[in-house]
Image 1: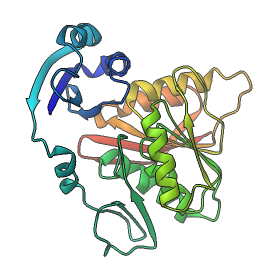
Image 2 (image 1 turned 60 degrees about the vertical axis):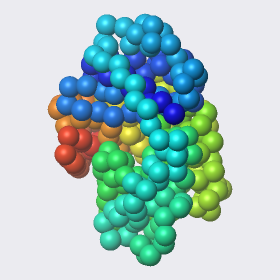
Image 3 (image 1 turned 90 degrees about the vertical axis):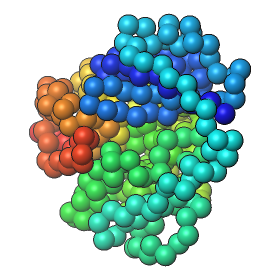
Image 4 (image 1 turned 180 degrees about the vertical axis):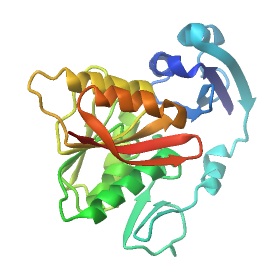
Length: 279
């Protein structure tokens, strides 16, 4: 098995990802650093895209391409690194194969399949903390749209915290499939509806609360499309993350232009997230 990694400049990551997804519809792994974004593709020799195709896809934003041979049992071994994630005193997210014993009032069990997300990434944890903060602030549990749902962690957590109905959307079919399967696994498939949606082309349903764990460029696209809506409909609150702490100010500025301001914020290492409220 081969891991082919493409590093590019952060400001061009969205464009590079869009091109890579055309070459590898099954999805890619993403890692972000202070001055780069790395997308990784896994596959047997001879089944990965050719290097010239990768170079064309990355274009002028390319920093580095690296191929690494990995053990044949990688698909099983990667599970060893995923541990249950506890959020506050009430919520725990754990992979489906983990031994139980992390009892919590709200338990979210996730099998990511070919989608991104077991709840361990800092940006997901930030979103879950802010969501739990909202749930504990008062009795209101409005309808939710989870933008870029991945394996459905946020949507399922919201459902188990009493929010709903919930629309979970993602542009990748494996993510939608994983979100549906995980909603059923957690007994919330009657509350969580998952479907495909390209946020660059189509506006999501307007609900009182949006969850948007996305990259900074895509968060800016969402803000632009939201501000351009002719009907003026918009969520009263958004939980946004997926951005580097150094990108915080530009995201705040993008949403300030359409009438939102931060009500609560979190920083975890290099990553940041916030709860935005409409004026």
